[in-house]
Length: 365
Image (cartoon, rainbow, N blue to C red):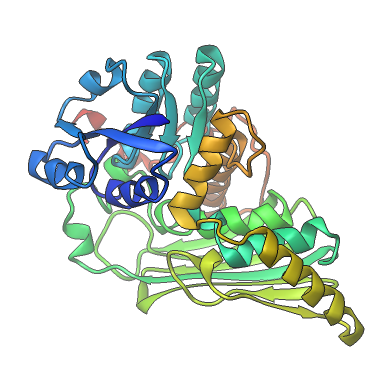
């Protein structure tokens, strides 16, 4: 049984649901939030769970095995490093860090502490994506050719009424960092890490500092080409993926927050290949029968991993690559040039991608 402290009762409520779905694996012992009433409401869901507004109190609690960071983005890296130094394993919501160098600092802190840092990418854990993984492992997909991904969500003034949102100092980025980071993680998981990026960004939906629209083109390590369309001005919320391999085409549904949990279609390029795909899908379905999805699916993998069992983990390196892609996107948008990855770490964008005019004194962020 692993004891967990959740820092932040906003998205932390969804994390709580994930832990409660695995009562033999996890026990949530503390909720930490500046809003004690909100923390108390969440703590009531777990027997014996206490509340506090002091992060230092949580870090010094000997009961706690895992610190689960669900705080505003600018706090992720400093709190993660402090938790690792305190000898705690860390689960961290996206974004894993707010710069490439900051992400590398977290990996170094984890190595020095011999504790685990585990970035959250819960979209990976769903039926459709497990099927795609199984097909790829069975060499039934062929090589990646092209993919189109869409993150078309609706975010209005009410969403941005939360003080830290839409501001460079506190959110540290816009739709590219806070919304499309999930679907970019998914497409690069199957097509390989991005190696080249060309970008146009704009703020067209809300009067905020950060971007809320993007048109992105990528080349990946497999040679596959990806186009990503992002907006926070959609009529409703929709995420969609269409991945074209030379042996089959895989397409998701439109679930905005769990595209992997939708029913996907897998269509063979050649008619005679469909029977092998269908047979494999039947096998994969039996293998994944009863496996949880979303946060519960990722937390189950965390439990197995910390218990020394094989597990389909999101690695610290996955977290680093997601942040490096964000930095490359901002670099490409600001220079108008095609940017190659991995990035030269001496580039200023690797240390801080906040535009100069929005930096100022970040102590009040």
